[in-house]
Length: 335
Image 1 (tube, rainbow, N blue to C red):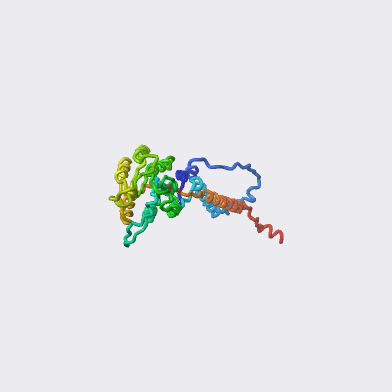
Image 2 (image 1 turned 135 degrees about the vertical axis):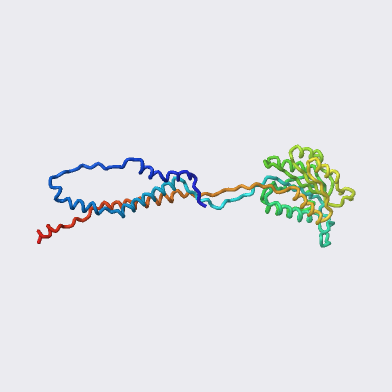
């Protein structure tokens, strides 16, 4: 689409007509010569004046009007607007904190087909599906076991994030669970985030038994720093022993940070939990648009130069002196 940056320039279109109407005519000063025998060649002078090139004068007038239109078009600054370029800008940082302790290697997760798979394998599938549903969010990854460590900072490079998630193994972080440290590492990971919303999705199959930072104290710090935490207890709620789930602690963490606590016992339930978190955290990416512009002012200027050369050529032909014809008296004298 073509638009003009200065459309008011077209208001100058009737300016030549106003000048023609109100300005006095231009009279070229000429020196006059009077001779006593003017009547002898008066008929020749009248013959030359009667051969005025009326058609050529109209052509020149039309060329000058076109020149004026082209100059106005150049002054109005035409630009060609190309198709807009859109870019989604995320407004939220999401961190997935996944328990990588040795207990995640247990093959007790039932699939819809009735098979039993590792807990971490089920988490990978559900987390990968969640990442695929959030194309406009910056997502990071934290793993924890004996200690917590960042695996990927929040970014829009989801392909790289999925590759890192696929390379995680149960037990690679030790046999214990540092739940509070996972929250602390996430806070450090998001310390320089300028986005208005920050979310942590914390998944574990056990209870905290190794953190240097108490999980509830870490939750209070997260609340003060506007970090919302959704917790997922993955396993059986009635389990007992060293690997039992501290569902009450996870619920307190979620409540203090204005998040939600979930419990998932199989693969289908885990996928439903991630879908519920996806619904609780609607995508609110902003759209940045850029409109490429191509300047077209040179086009009317080039056309105006071409018309100006054409006018000069026409004017030169008009002013070319006619070839004088020999009079009948001279032909008889020569005979």
